[in-house]
Amino acid sequence: MTKRDRKNKQLADHYAALERLAKFQGREISGKKLSLILWRLENSVNPAATAYCNGEIDGDKWEEIASEAKERVYELLGDIPGFFINGDPRGYSLKIDASIHDPIYDLGLHRDFGGYLILSPEITGNQ
Image 1 (cartoon, rainbow, N blue to C red):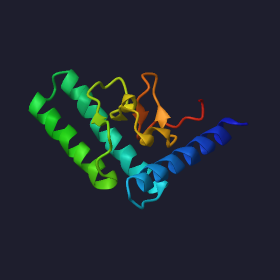
Image 2: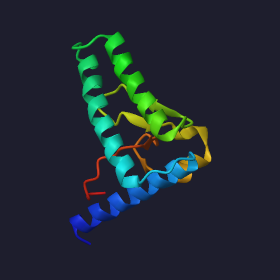
Image 3: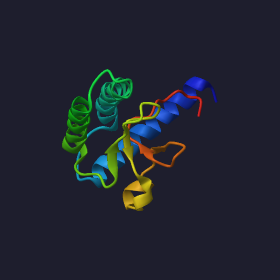
Image 4: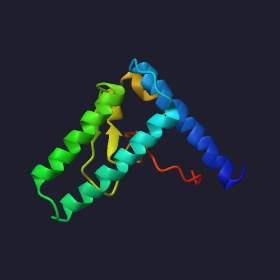
């Protein structure tokens, strides 16, 4: 399998997992559309976390950005058990704590090394 084939399979798997998540949450939205929205959100929150850690923005501004991102995810998918905005810029920002053992965690979402579920992972074709 080529790198392109792996990447396409990973994307298809991710879209399907997001559709299962949306359906589980009682929402009807295409996985691809949801992925694009979440990717844009991830790419706006993570730089803000970096700016906060570097002292470029204060805690109030970081909380405002994180709160807005959380509200946007809630608008899209409802209240997801264990969902949080990660303030550590070295990792993904849109995470679900999988230690809660909810059926949501068997939907096939990407996991990071810490075991957290990732709503918007980088798809490279290398995994």
